[in-house]
Image 1 (cartoon, rainbow, N blue to C red):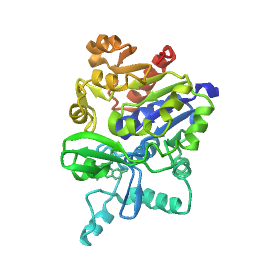
Image 2: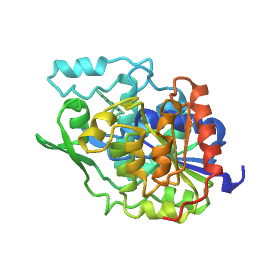
Image 3: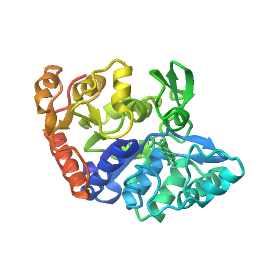
Length: 320
Ligand code: FO1
């Protein structure tokens, strides 16, 4: 495929990684760039943990654990049970195989490698030809503002299991964090379309777009920007997206997602079960297509990727 047929996707969490896998079945090799959220990243037990990068590494290599939605399949938990014997922190579960990724990443970062370099090395070792691109090589952790105070993201998401009521999110150093060189190089080489994967808009996509100047960089490409709704029939397929949409004052629907993205996207894909919302979303001036968007199998992922790219190709850039 020519350079111009390069595709950029923005991803976080389970839904993002699934559509990224679908895109990797259609877009050959390094013509697919998947920008990974780094807002979930944190230091834990002396290790640098990067969950949204790891969701992509595992899903694109087929190592992902389907039922947990994070970490890798065929896992054992000897480290965790031995750590518990010592009274160590076990609220954030690290499987024995998964641990190799965190230890080796931490070692390479301490050697002075960038997160992009480390991620590219791991992708190659896992046999992944798509480019997994951290949005920044700087740190920009997400802080969750809740009625019980400000909580670091993983403490909210895992330790508190998303219970506290959210009234805002803060992306700590997003304005100072710089878009990574590898993302800039990918954009400068020319992209045909930009896909916002069906990830949580607030905890996965907004922290990516908040990185200094990234939204402008995307708009400068003049490539159509298409978002796939992570909300179907008012519920989130995975994670707290539905609860957060409500708590942050958005309608918990594909229409609520469209409203959140209205100033930025050129079109939206919503699930066929929400085809009754097509008029509402078109009335907002957003071209929309209702397609099967529940991804259980690799075939589902590839089909949604195909539908999304076909829709993008027919879109005109909307003047914003
Ligand atoms: N999510 C959990 O709900 N419980 C866990 O114990 C947990 C451990 C974990 C370890 C490595 C990793 O890469 C992800 C992990 N996650 C866990 C998911 C993590 O919280 C992600 O940030 C979410 O998937 C949201 O993107």
